[in-house]
Image (cartoon, rainbow, N blue to C red; front, side):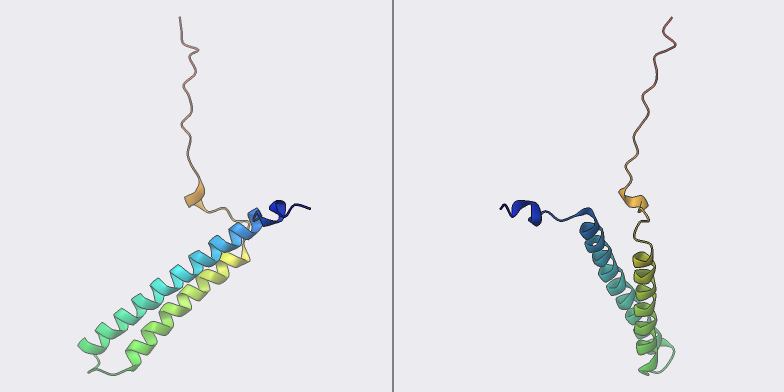
Length: 96
């Protein structure tokens, strides 16, 4: 018996892996952005209170989680980033 056929990942597992990678990266970016915005607002407007930082981080993480749920609910949705446009070849019918 050969195990080589079983080691090849299927298209579905690759799609799920790519979706997880997207979700983790997106959630971390949104969490960090919310944390940064909350920190700036805490320093500038709210006299160094902690609640704007916590609120910003929570809002960012919540937006990342909502995007992940959307990505996993529709796994067959093809992402526009993966499309490659091909230029149509001009037909040489006008050769006179």
